[in-house]
Length: 287
Image (cartoon, rainbow, N blue to C red; front, side, top):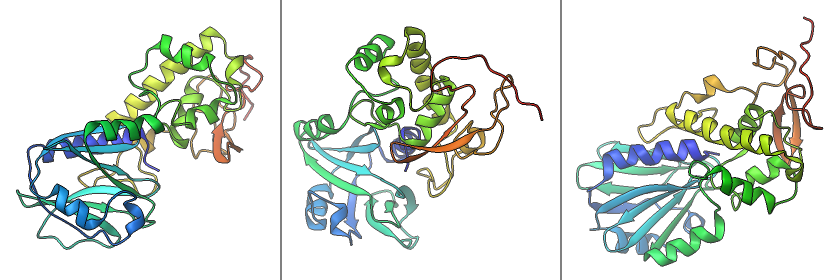
């Protein structure tokens, strides 16, 4: 599933191309379940003739602000992509929403698995209620003191907490593993066991891992491409995710990365520099 860096990359790409453009048609909504609170007719009637005034990201949602206080909200789920194409190009397979603009460009929501979601909100209040019910603070905006306060209110395992969108918005399986490796914290560590220093490392890792992935335009391991249809490059720099059996990339470690299951999700961890019982001295294996 595209996570915060991929969604942010897409939102930035759409913003560069679409701000100020006017919608001239909406079509291809052939899977009604993808639009829980609107029909194709409603989307078309509401959106056509309106101008794109803003494009933002909140958690894993892309929020398209239209003139007249209307908002089109898109969630790509497991396999969805938002791709810009010129209107002279045919609509690709698995496209379940098209939005055409007055400059000859078209936004296609391509989703082979049909898990993506399309929402329409009339008024900022309705949008804010929807988002506030589902999402916690933005990871790249949270201060260390606020993270400490949130951690003090929670119990349970670290990875489960990072995957909880009401705790922090936008972190998924891949980046949770990368964050915890960088912070030297085991995914099954209990939240209440963290020392002040470990909470500081967690905050720093969240900021660094996510911001760096955005600079690399996201991680493309399967379906993800950006608004221009191009893959990201962060997959070339992953430290633990998907690397079971390979050596830990820390120079002072080098021990084997293992795959386990945490919170019903595949999880990659270095048991040596992410000890479940807390800190211990790193010992390099003999090869």
